[in-house]
Image 1 (tube, rainbow, N blue to C red):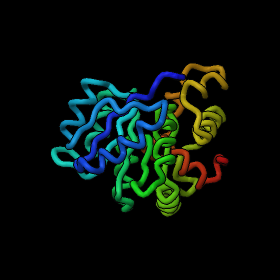
Image 2 (spheres, rainbow, N blue to C red; image 1 turned 90 degrees about the horizontal axis):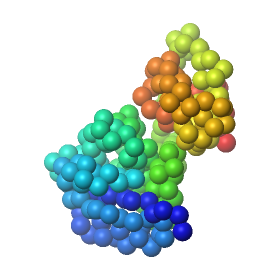
Image 3 (cartoon, rainbow, N blue to C red; image 1 turned 90 degrees about the vertical axis):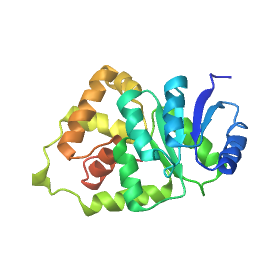
Image 4 (tube, rainbow, N blue to C red; image 1 turned 30 degrees about the vertical axis):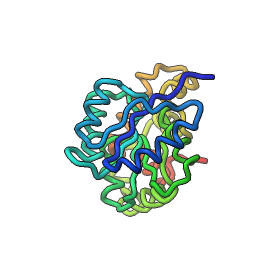
Amino acid sequence: MSEQIRVLLADDHAVVRAGICQFLEQAPDIQVIAEAGDGEMARNLIEEHKPDVAVLDIQMPEATGIEVTRWVRANYREVGVLVLTAYDDDPYVMAVLQAGANGYVLKTAAPTDIVQAIRDVNEGKSALDPRITHKLMAHIAGRSLPEAEYESLTERELEVLSLAGKGFTNKAIGVQLGISDRTVQGHLAKTYSKLQVNSRTEAVMRAVSLDLIAVE
């Protein structure tokens, strides 16, 4: 069996945590290594254990999931962040993705979908609930930039963004294009700036809405 995915679970409701833990640990490749009942505890435990994936609720005492996500991105970029919440309001969705979360899944999702989302985040892919994807597409389409208002992407930037849209990690993109993953990250950073977005997911969605790339 491959190495287990080490997960930290943060939710301020003990009963909810217990239920999530129960089905997560039925997955042979997932191990819940720590649980947190508030945002501050989540930060402390992430600092202590450096999990592969942090699964965070949004509304928590001491610090919200959004604040914890920003902190993780500033301090532990290697830790994947999956937000698991009951909220699908547009402001929450946008705030979470702009904070740098790798995934956003609703608690109404099937346990198998949540487990798969954790696997996807661990592999460097985006994991979005279908309802969240629709909201994000509508949001970005509603504020799409006219062609004259964004700087054209180079052929290599389009190649990188297209592969990112298909779920490949930076390392996998680099292998396919014969460049380093650091160079891939540099191309993505330039793309974010040109398209005026803050995250990988937003960049892909914006590029799709502008017919720059197509994703399966």
